[in-house]
Length: 326
Image: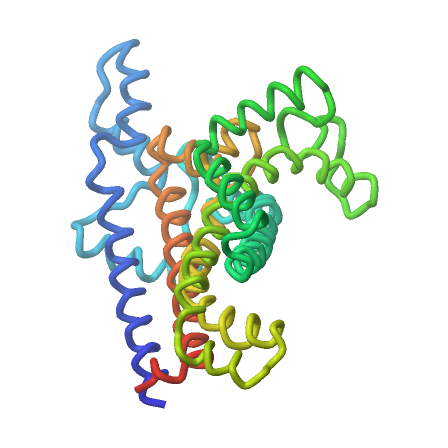
């Protein structure tokens, strides 16, 4: 019980620190959206202080000293009120995130889970058959895939399978003529648009899971308890899964928690290449337009999701490996 209470306390302390940093960072950036609007107006004549105040009020920019802004910020978070987007005025930040988040969770989330399951399984099989053709082919293939940057592979797939072969759509999450609805036709259309970005994320992340699991499990196979299990005549499948793979999975599980927590942040480069309307694309637009409320909400959402994922992984560690609770 002490172990789990300690993890909860650490989670709450880290969450408060992340929320505070999320408040500070955007305010350290030079300039503001009001400055951009005023610069355009200044071309037609001088901008009075009253006009500047009016523009700042219209954009909903924070007022008062930093401490009062911080209290307003905490109060807004408690009520899940992230304000109005500066770059999409008067649309609320919650509406923009609500429209982009399902696309990111569906694409990046599903592909990340598939990549982890496939990569971890292949890595365990390769480690068990170390030194054979299976291990050699898998090692070369995974190293080859890991060498490709995501944006480069995305451009190659986009060019050859999208423009040249014309097999898959080249941009967007669905056809321009389609209307989002739960019908089978729209789901198929959305899946067709998700194949190329999903394949990019899968191929570029698969190698890391494979090699990570393979290397850890090879080290685990040399431990005494695995040798003891084999000497007692247990089935090879039981030794591989229950003794070797279970313990070798722990480091991969930590990495999976970090990656899964970052899923809500999307895959910025891939979403940019394919013009996929996810959180990554939304974050890029927010930074480009100095949209503080939108940036803060996205950063906070990513941070909290990573913290929650790590918290869950810590609890799972205590279940899978009781030694960590000592």
